Image (cartoon, rainbow, N blue to C red; front, side, top):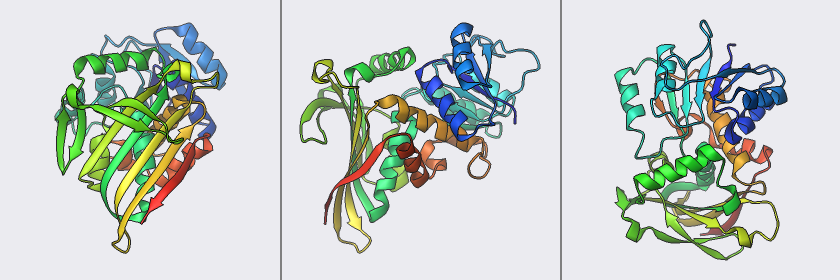
Length: 333
């Protein structure tokens, strides 16, 4: 197989993801593409058999070596020119991206509409690159009908992400402070005056948070047909960490009916003691693995999201294998 081109492969998400891919698929060739060749080389050295290239997102050929060929393009950084996507389409390669929020996906959607048969494109700028959506869908197994889904996410102040992730968050906040929800079957944008939310944690404590606009909302809504879906996000302040390692905590509340048609309400928690990095890496690695058909059938051209291609049970198993805890904390019938 030709190597997977990982743009931004020397960052936090890239280094963790390529390490996972190397573990899952030892023979998969990887090329780490970055502006800083020295940093990329350190990541490649850790992987053992990866190669490195410099990349110039301002060029349609990305400044890559003449004659170089790849099996997929994985963009783990912001590409304002969308040259990485266009490069993938030009060469009919699968493309994976994580940096476009709900109000930014128009260029990618239109690019695929103009060239619908060129490449399979996975839009995965969900929480943890789709890992939360997949865990939530796994939690729906007891339901015959899902009426509401509420995801409550808590990250520690010291664990928001690396420079690329921080830049994404700052850009999204500048574009809109509105929250996106599905309410009584209608997708609704909440003004910032209505996005305040109280996020309840596993220990029963609460944090002030905000209902945010993320692709998880439409993904969960269309995957389950739940009439009410929202995702609330809170930051645990650094002074509350008591010297321990920053952790990530996701609460998933579902309501609906069970297989017998009786009312059912459940609460699940997805947590990782090492924070968001390993969860995000699993989400990305799952998407890349699936686009390359390393698991499952070949993926047709067009737009895809994590839950449209990845089996939730398999994803949850991979998350647990990476050290995550996924538990059902409450069931009310």
